Image (cartoon, rainbow, N blue to C red; front, side, top):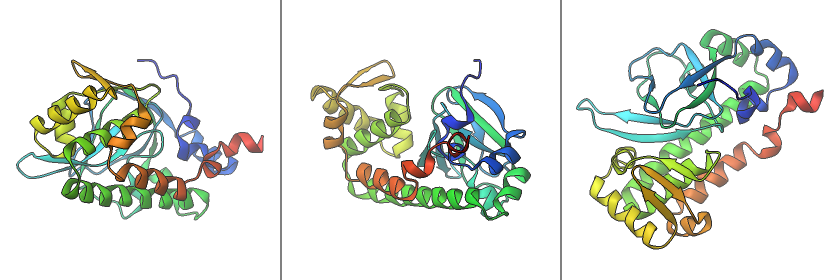
Length: 246
């Protein structure tokens, strides 16, 4: 796959000021991941921060017996590797590519040096970290209190929002793994959504037909997470500042 996206297709990189980006630009390397590829594993010492442009990745918590549940979804709205500037050391979770896609990676020392300047990069990365904490906390509430059909709707909406189109490439088994529920529950929930005319599902491909209708079937978590991200990282703060200054 040829890398065709721009660093500014990532909302966090697009928000940087000219001087910050000039210091990072020479170190921002384009990378391509294939679907289901491991980006980093639990216990790894991460060497780079990854800023997705077209990639969508899942942050997973993994138990000693191999069971896993998604703690956060990361697309062009965020980054992978927040632990680098929050103390570093081995990771306690893993990151996997949900879709084939592109990202830009920046070496850990370079990112940390820029972070320690306490400029706009630090400001926006700390706000993004807070949004990740909200996402992880909301996931726990969702798993405990909301119906599987609602969780499936939420899962599909979040991935569709980070895609260029309304198609989500995911099997029922993968959705079940991400949500930490039984596959049978996902099959039943997806069937309900399809009967309502909100999605079309066939062989691991889900097409969102009615976004607004799917929102009505999803739990409150969708609106909570969307509004929290917008509060912390409003569109006005994530415009390409480098282009504005030109």
